[in-house]
Image (cartoon, rainbow, N blue to C red; front, side, top):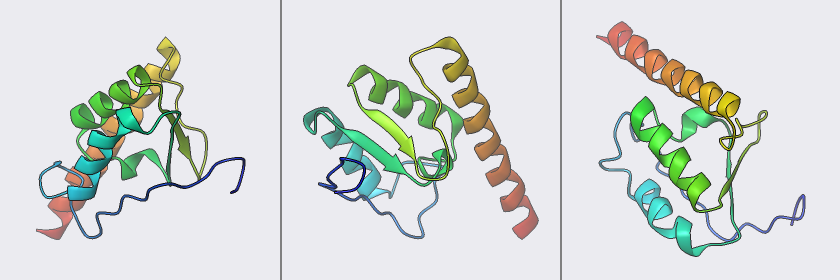
Length: 109
């Protein structure tokens, strides 16, 4: 138990695209379980691990806030979605993640 948190569940969708939620069984399970695992904290390496589709990721973040789930990044500070500046920061972050994914996809072709 580090930082007073006990890990009760891990969600791993290895080698799955974050551009869509399709095929991400653990991600979908996480979304389904979020309302029941209260009080809860969602720990991710960085926000881009949540997804590479800005709309889907922002919707997931907003659902988390509504359900009282705290989002924590291990590599820095997650935007605080409870205020306007945090919301703007999240939109920028999610848009950058999607743009990065688009460019990476184009470079591979």
